[in-house]
Image (cartoon, rainbow, N blue to C red; front, side, top):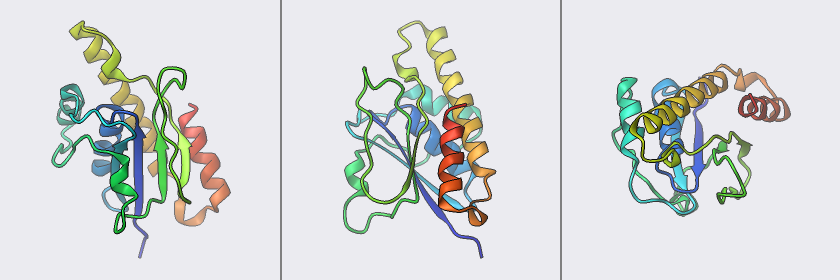
Length: 163
């Protein structure tokens, strides 16, 4: 029997990148992964363009919501095996650091919600973020986690984010 891994995607606002990543992993990794997302300073509302990209890919958006990472440090919260931070620029954003012992990696990419008011630019930014996250998560899912040691896994997941 294969193990089920808990994966948390973190961003500051938990409204776009981390929501996209949660939706993609829920869809593509559902056999062996449980996906979650959160933010250190959650926006409180999921960006509608993030939901649109997931729906466009025929991925469920049920239950996706902007929430604080505090939910995942409470008693009874799932224990994380992997935590991926998605913030792109530490000079402009506070990128949360996850406490505890999960395997962590930084998969930084620009916040598509900050692409401006022009609808074409905004759509392109969300599409680019979706494609990048889908590719990274696909590579992550292809890793033979059960047969690799911790150091090999850590090196692999860090390389995925460094494309």
